[in-house]
Amino acid sequence: MIKKYLLAIDGGTGSVRALLFDTNGNQIAISQQEWTHQAIANIPNSMGFDYINNWVLIKECILDVLKLSKINSDDILAVSSTSMREGIVLYDEQGAELWAVANVDARAGNEVKFLKEKFPGIEERYYQQSGQTFSLGSIPRLLWLKNNQAEIYEKVAKISMISDWILYKLSGILASEPSNAGTTGIFDLKNRTWAYQMMEQVGLKTNIFPDCFESGTSFGNVSKTSSKETGLSCNTKVVLGGGDVQLGSAGLGVVKNGQVAILGGSFWQQIVNIKSTIQPPIDMNIRINSHVINNLSQAEGITFFSGLIMRWFRDAFCDKEVERALKLGISPYTILEDEAKKIPIGSYGITPIFSDSMKYGKWYHASPSFINLSIDPMICNRYSMFRSLEENACIVSKINLSKIEKFSSIKVDEIVFAGGASRGELWCQILADVTGCRIKVPKITEATALGACIAAGVGAGIFQSIEDGAEKLVSFEKEYLPNINNYVKYQEIEAKWIKIYEAQLKLVDENLTDSMWKAPGV
Image (cartoon, rainbow, N blue to C red; front, side, top):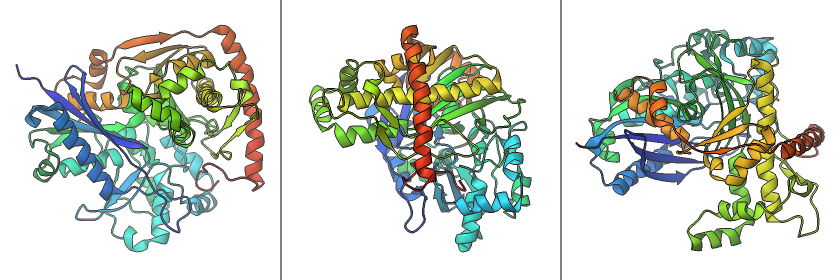
């Protein structure tokens, strides 16, 4: 019997990857390319998405996976994609890309202020329907384009998310699905479709939205053009995927009401599955997204740049560890964690100031810094600072989960943990100790890609549904139980961190330091 395969394309914040799985969920091959999203000259707070160069990187990943796996591309039944949310691509009438931005593009500050002043209460009303604020939404960005690059705006005929764009490049057909489309903020959580009237109210085009189908829907095949460029077969089905967090949840088996996960990637997301009929909270502190599972939404907290900060720390300070790791054939993070295990809880009081806990209605961060450093090199060194970063990511995650518990009344006692961060044994144990929860780590830590694999499998007829695929493919290999004494200590550290962070935000408010990131209009 000829073995069959499923292909997932994962366009994350920091890299793009092609991952090949067999139909039993075993990872066969992976190829990855780091990509960056640069600010546009003379446009403050912008973060463009280079769709020309990034498509080249995607093609290279696909070709590399086919080379590494040595399989016949005709045996790939289906391909699906996942990506960072919020990033959008705009197209003209002929289907050519016009303009694109990555997830945390924040150029539209003046437009957010305009919308709030011109239409009092508009953000609150739209949030109650969509679960999104204007902080990362598409309406202010489209308004910015209309105000600043009208010649481009006038040509806009369609909009899509980056995951949809990947599949469009593969198939030549543009379609969307709720989990990523919902992050535009132009969406109805209950009905799981575009909310056209939002655009009409603010004077934007209402006819630019592609058809919206559920994740796992097969809507075409790899085109002849794409087949020549990527080596994929025209017999391979192209299947709608979804947002990285929601498909990542499916790849963790988090497909039922009340289940909880943390995805530890470039950003960290803390998610709790809730029924789609639950109204978003009045305080707007937490984000609500459509899940890839019909009738479910997800309450979500976000921790900014946790994984990217680790990459920065590695590249800026850890040359010796990188060199040693290369010789040993292991990850530099393994060496850093082994040394960080020797550092006591609390990292000698070192307090990292990077991402704040989620304040979705008024979201900005303090200036990146380390507080309470010592000039004693035995106390303050690469390893204590590294441990402090791992502790801080867990503390901010715990604060976000506490906000979701308060809003949803769902008690969190078990967390599925995945993504690159879950490879670190120390980081997993710190997460258990900080949250006081059982931490479960799946055998395949690349949950987002596995979720896209499951979606592809649904479209290919391998699985009856995403829930069915998750049940068949997801298994766990490690559990970490909390140390209660450590939990008590981390509660004290958490309380201190909150006060220190508030003080650091005041420095931003007084224009003495620069915010790491500000939502448009804040």
